[in-house]
Amino acid sequence: MDCIRFYSFYYKQMTHSKNKGKRGELEVVELLEKYGFSARRGQQFKGTPDSPDIIHNMEGFHIEVKKVEAFHLHHALEQAIEDKAENETPLVFYKKNRKPWIVVLEAEDFLSLMQDLYE
Image 1 (cartoon, helix red, strand yellow):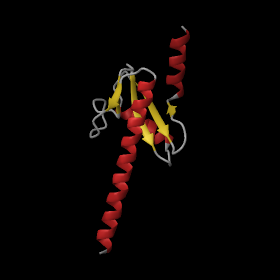
Image 2 (cartoon, helix red, strand yellow; image 1 turned 120 degrees about the vertical axis):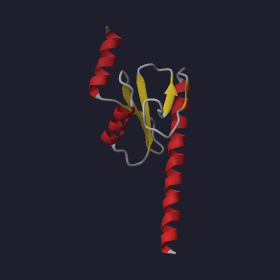
Image 3 (cartoon, helix red, strand yellow; image 1 turned 60 degrees about the vertical axis):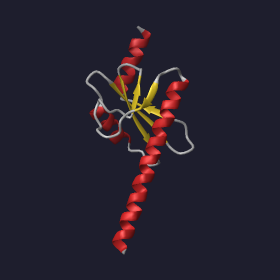
């Protein structure tokens, strides 16, 4: 009986986590659309450049979405780096409950974007 309770609890936790991730991705899609970008959820089974969290029209960027309370910044950024295509800049959209969305990227990527903007 204890084994059954454990698996039931584990399954509920995993389902809750997946649903929260899905809600986060839909929120990011809505946010991008609010600013005029085209976006939709990607296929969620591979973790490769051809199955990103968000499919969008911001050429050159890979988006990883994390809607969690315990955020592991470097782990999330490493995942985005691993999943991105060769010429993409990895972005991590992060949100904690009742807080605004935050975008994380490596400093060199940010400075390169700023350099392109001011040239």
